[in-house]
Image: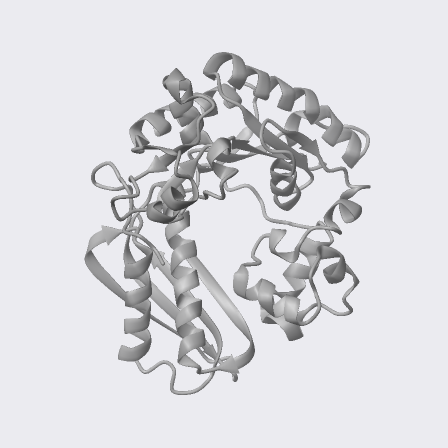
Length: 360
């Protein structure tokens, strides 16, 4: 069976819902989050606000400085969740299997009813279904969505991001290599800031450089190398996890050279903590357990964790606990090959989640 995977991404979801429900906000730079006079972060921003450089997870005070005309609106997560349920029910009418990633994003499997004589013909058969979904969301919910189609999760996600807002992009198998070539390496799944910097220092700036690099990239990014090479070629064998619940969220960095430099390790932990906090915020989850994972040059790997009483989604807390675990267990007694931070014991907030403390 040919795989036909879609990704639907609601356009500026929180802000769009607010603009739909309050006509006075339409056309204005809407920033969903705490006001700039309070410590907090941006949960979402309208496209009008994004023109000023406002982005999710940005401190509210920074957003206010970048966009003085911005209209700050407190998030209403119950409203967004209810809207998300209605949209997913609408999508389910098509018969597509759904792996929901967050309130505003989901992978869709059209494979069972979009089968042609070839992979690309099968993908073409999904186009009318995707158009039907977009039209139904616009008509019934007065919102817009971007949809990407491809033979796997990686391509579907890149396609969905390609023409936002209100986009519909199909990446055919015969076109995928060329489509990927001009993209920066950080466009690929799993390539964060630190990994991108390691690749850039080696002269690898675009996906084209990854495609043309001899070997499997282990010398640059460790065990992630072979997978990264496959991603650069548009290959991805991850399957949809239907009805699965997120049990943990983690981020790992393999260093170009083993290091015990405290500033480097702290900067890495801080970046990982912010990445995890942003993911939790998007999925509206909190965590009670923080774990650090280290690997040495001989590939000895150790993990240590701590569980605390009050669940949180605060990046600063995750960073502090990560530093505490490294020091308490003397994990940096020799240079590290890999450093990872993760959270588990995940749950929805006991009450409506407003915003974590300012990250930075």
